Amino acid sequence: MARIDIRSNGGGGTVSTGVLQLENGVAMDATLRNVADQNNTTSPLKLSTTAVQVTSPLRITTSDASGFYLDAEDSATNNRFSIKRDPSSQEVTLDFASNPAGSTTLVGAIRTYRDGVNLSAAMSFIEDGSVGVGTSAPVGILHLYKSAAATRLAIDGDAGFNRLISYRTGAVQRFGLYVNNTAESGSNAGSNFAIRAYSDAGALLTTPFFINRATGNVGVNTLTGTAKLQVVGSGSTSATTSFLVQNSTPTNTFTIADDGVTTVNNPSTNVNTRLNGTTIDFYSSSTQLASIGKGNWNSNSTITFQASLTGNNDLRVSSSSVRARASLQVGNSDNSVVNGSWTGKVLTLGNGLGNGEVTEITSANPTTFPASQSDIFFYGGVGSGGNSGDIFVQHNNTSKRGNLIIGSNTRTASAIVSIASTTQGFLPPRMTTAQKNAIGTPVAGLMIYDTDLNKLCVYTGAGWETITSI
Image (cartoon, rainbow, N blue to C red; front, side, top):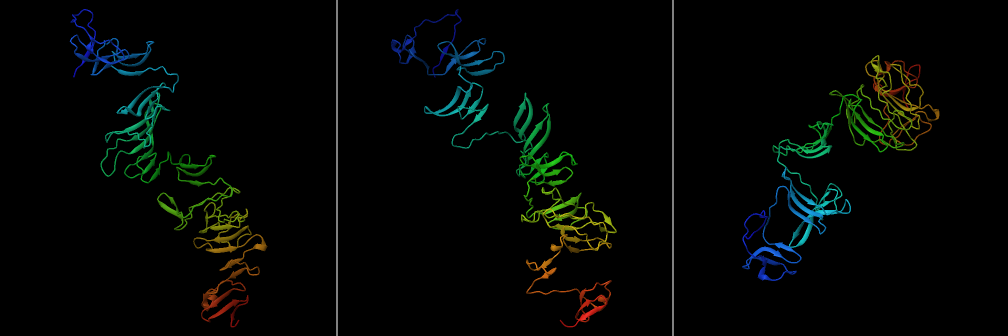
């Protein structure tokens, strides 16, 4: 292929004689014509009154002092485009210098074409240094755009090496997004994702977020997540928190401290906190103490629900706006044991409307409960010293006191106990005559069924009387 070399002869060398002319010796006009020698042998150089064209590779030789390979200027000698090499560092630079009017003005672009048709602005440059890939109007230092297709930024690399995006301040790393250098060993293992935090000096502080590629487990402050989400706190006391949920106020609504204390707080008035279909287990070390939804309560476990109505420890059990609140207490406040039994109520359900207060029972073996504003008392002692399983139904308002209704939703005003059924009967306690006579201090009106006599018996206050007919 023909090639034309344009260079200086230094002013002192021998130059062969000859004549350069336009092909066929015609005068120059607006038509591009080859430059030829005196024998009319054409070169790859074409000239016209308006353009210069080289139809073969162009070799430009310059001195190291100038550094310029190509320098394009306008008619006022203003630099517009240049390719140059720094003589000392050997750095080659490509400069756009279109002197734009503003920082968002396009100063240069690399475009793709097919058969003379522009396909895209593959890379564009604006005055403030921003670069657009696929767009001629970048809005950031690097702006990626793909028309009518998925836009993908691919960060590729070999297994066993970090692939990362680094966030820095003053050239010192602050955060890094990593696909880490854990070697891939089959079964989807390796190349795990991590977010790392760095100190003011650029040293690794911690990995606050980690995803294991093989298992999908997410670790917060841990690299060995053993669950789909594992959160590792920064301590072991209530001074630090492992997990916190807040609303926009912000008010804490769900908190797990590093000592395991869990707090559910509902800041909204008259809005229920719900645990639907959920089983909650309580542990101390590795020993299960209690469970909601299965298992048994243990005396060392406490569950507290706090409502916002009065600040009392409550569990809202009614959806009715009339029954505004009902209290739930399991065990007494200090779990004290007197003579082998709890000194407090095992379970109390209040009647709502602010009247569900609980009165502490200090007697180890109460036979009655003090008048209070609660509807139902369950009292279950432990050991030989306490009553077990007693149910008290009462109210401090005598007009509403203690009706027990079974098998019906209709209250009979004149009956303190009302039982309704068309398929079942009432079964009193059944015992032998000897067992009947062994009842200690029976009260008048006490009724049992004597299995030796096959009769109902009522204690009159003076003795047992057999009911022979009704």
